[in-house]
Every structure is written in C-alpha cells, then in structure tokens.
Image 1 (cartoon, rainbow, N blue to C red):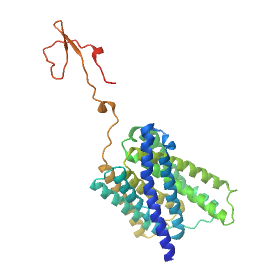
Image 2: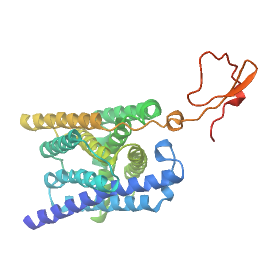
Image 3: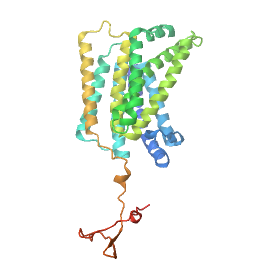
Image 4: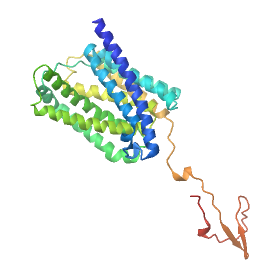
Length: 345
C-alpha cells in the first residue's frame, strides 16, 4: 500500500510540474502568435500555427495523463490536493520568465485559494462505484443533474453572449467562469468515457451503446470550448492570477457537479458538509483578493498611445505667423485652417 501511495505521490507531483509549466509555455506561444497576427483574446487562432503553443499543449496532456495514472495507484485524498502545486509552479515560472509580479496580498490570495480548494477536496464526499455506461447515463439524466446542466449552460450563454463583448478584456471572471463551468461538465463526460474504455478492456465492449458516443461527443465539444476560453484568459491576464482562480473554481464546480450527479452527499456527516462550505468561503475570499490586487491592464486606446504634434498657421492683421510651442498669444484673432493640422503617420 505504501509503495502504491508513493508511486501515486510521485506521479501527482510530476503532473503538477507539467501542468504548471504548460501555462507558461502556452502563454509564451500566445504572445508570439499575437505579435505577428490577431490575438486569441480578440478571436484570433494564429496560435494554432505556433510551435511553442503546441509544446505547451503536449506538456499539459502529459501532466493530465500522469494525474490520471496517479489515481490508479493512490487515493483521491492524496492525489487531488497535490494539483494545487501547479499554481505554485506557474507562479514561480511566471515571475522569472514572464516578469509578472504579484503583490503581497496577491500571494495571500494564492494561499487562500490553495487552502480552500484543499479543504474542499479533503472533505468532499466519496464516489460510488459505477459498473456500466447505462448506469452513468441514468445518473446524468436524473432531474437534479439535468437542472444543474441546464443552469450551467444558461450561465455560459450569458457570459459568452453578453458579458464577454463588454467585460471580457477587463474582468478575469468572465473567461475563467466559462472555463470552469464547462470544465465541470467535461469531467462528468470524461468519467463516462473512461468507464466505457475500462469495461471494454475488461471484455465488456461498450462501443455498441449509443450513450458511449454521446458522452464522447460532449467531451470533445466541452474540451474545445474550455481550451478556447482558457487561451483567451491566458492571453489577456497574468498567468499567476489565471492559474489559481481557474484551479479553485474548476475544482469547486467539479465537486459540486459530482455530488449532484452521483448523490455523494447522502450519509455524510455534518462536520464534512460544514468543512466543504468553509472551503468554498475560503476559495471565494482568495479569489476576491487576487482580483482586487491585479495590476490594471493599460487600455488599448490610440489616443493614449500617440501624442500627435499639431502645427497650424495663424493669419492676423494681414501677416502670416506660424505657431510655436509657447508663442501663442490670446490677443491674436486667428482663423485656423483645418488643412493645416498635421498628424504624424
């Protein structure tokens, strides 16, 4: 048992290192792509042609795979909290490679997010064993989870259609909210696909079940949407802020979705429920601290970036006088011709 836990611990640590590094590598790739074309935050997809971005994607996939294998060897209460280490990895690398600075309160916000998420995970209810895709389909179509899925999609639509055009470039919670909500649905569908693969490898093929392919389709659509808005968040805001907020919200919503879908709250003690609620409050506090201490991004306004030099000719009393910096006198009665305004090109 101890050997298996040690293997799971090492894999979880490696997973955090890969995932934390992937944020920085993808950020560098997005910066390179934005320098030569339209940015991801404005709807561009030039990063798909940037090799560095793909290196970051491969790094993230390796990290997620290591995390998946870690769950085979060690229990979730050991593996999942270690995912918070990816925040520290990305923050340290962002400090040295991206020159992104966090204020002292920002560091406290990161710690609050990590602590709150860890408390939630450690006191989250356990999962019940699932034996077939049909069983998980029945859980996915129960009224409680259908209500959660419908509410999630409604919130995502509001964020995408209303909030993103207005606040996407200034409020980090828009992009992170979309990623986290969609991510919670991604985990549920991925779990179903994983069960189907496991049962198929054990000799009970699930390929003939329509539900299997529905879950595969949902997984692909959710993953694409999640990555798209995560790229926008990384391209718009600091990695050291995106990483902890995304981890905290994604972890919290995933636990909520899992509790609703698998009815894990039944039979839980009051102390566990109170601990989870305290974890949520801690995560919320950390998120607010991080958001309040984020350095404001300079507005992309041409009038704040360019200071045009204006010259004009003044006709007064039959004489022509050219304006200089401090020569304008209020006694001149001037006619300023519009075609004498010159803006440097």
